Length: 119
Ligand code: HEM
Image 1 (cartoon, protein in one colour):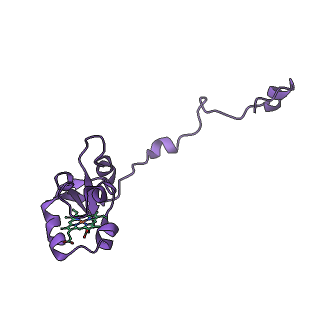
Image 2: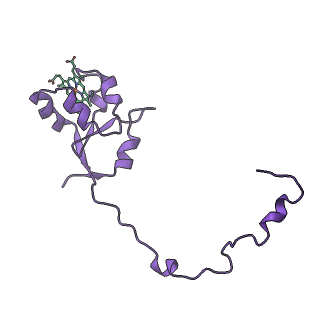
Image 3: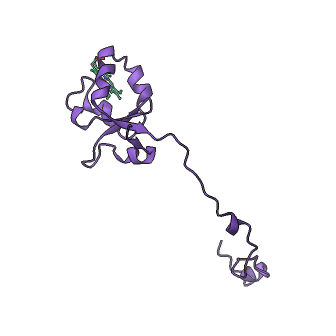
């Protein structure tokens, strides 16, 4: 099975500050760090999409089928597209406000009664 990566994890590998340069193309994750100096379209073109989804740019550059085949040499995994499971602490959500709950200031007008308005 392919290694799965979160988009947020890929985003950190943007090729900057000595970090690896990863790209997302059609849901797959590619490590193009070693390809930067060899890419016929230039390393800058790849760095521009470091850590991002380059699917559109890859298509728009009009890559040959050879370039498409070359993709697999750089594949390191896929994007984990499963939606994150959000566990709601239902017991807490249902709890009534406690004495710690901040309530409205009973006399809000008093603060500015001196004529000095801080806002
Ligand atoms: C792993 C990803 C990529 C691979 C393996 C790859 C590979 C290649 C290859 C083999 C070529 C030579 C022409 C061809 O065979 O089509 C090429 C050209 C080119 N690539 Fe990429 N490419 C990648 C990503 C990108 C991205 C993200 C861009 C973004 C703009 C890009 C822009 C270009 C451009 C503009 C050229 C044309 C250069 C020229 O003809 O002067 N490539 N690429």
